[in-house]
Image (cartoon, rainbow, N blue to C red; front, side):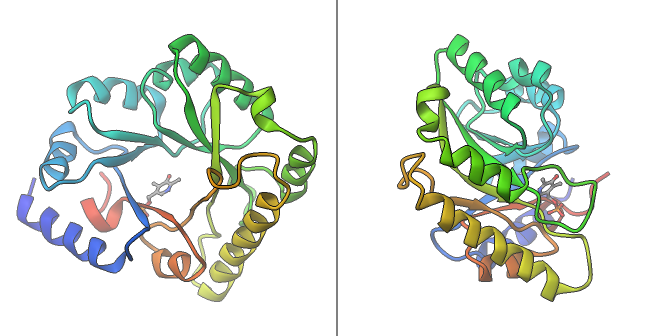
Length: 225
Ligand SMILES: *Cc1c(COP(=O)(O)O)cnc(C)c1O
């Protein structure tokens, strides 16, 4: 591992991100040594996609790392991450809220969640349709139903395309939905303040559309193995 190159890429990414926007270093498929090296540069928020991989790495790394789960999560794998995960970005169906709430209760903790919204023109990306979320929010107080969860905002992935106008359009749509849902007051709106959007290839567009959390892997660690 080239620590100097890592420090340089990390510095460049950090310089692009305005104050108040959270940088999540996406460390899926990265070794414990690479994560530790970024930690040693002062970074604390990391994102992982695979529950077993996260379960196996977490005990080998410093306890004050803030772990974000950003992948697709199966209900039967929630138990691997519930004891320590900070924020689950990819909540893409109601049944996952039941599983997360149950495992958070068992672990005696509260877990933060973001609703993933399907904004891309691709069949392969997971997420709620905007109308499904509107219907859920119109049912009223979400914390009454899932008391061990903290509803923190929305997450979305734009279409993987060269057409950056389309990417911006999708991110703007997510930001508008976020404003609309906050106004329904089904969750405390101060807490429901996060908009997780932006990866290495669409970071600038996401920031311009009002992202509050960016999930960056390649631009920090280099190409994934
Ligand atoms: C892998 C991944 C990222 C990071 O992608 P890069 O292009 O490496 O920055 C961000 N978000 C999600 C959901 C991912 O799966």
